[in-house]
Length: 144
Image (cartoon, rainbow, N blue to C red):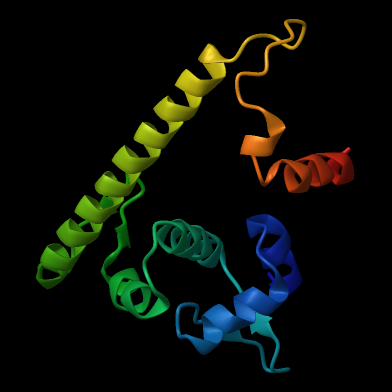
């Protein structure tokens, strides 16, 4: 498949796919005409790249990790045990970030639950005590 089809299949822009190639994360075949030819495997590779980037890994680390990711059809199989310490470290960092986000989510849920419905007129926090109120009101007005 050509780069446009890969972009459509993965939801990743052509520009970003070319960047992945520059970073040696993607290695498409080349047709005699010079056009890139991508395979189904490249679709999976791009999906792995996106997941790892969203987890906070850099392209250098991803470049080292991708060759170690052996797709057995039933999931990933280990292939590079020397990377395990780095993977454990990243796993722990992500677990801490998830815990922090869960705590923030719980705090917001508690604030929302403690806030009376719109039909009850209560203002326990006067506008003069909220210096950012006009800015927030302007942002709300723009988004409507």
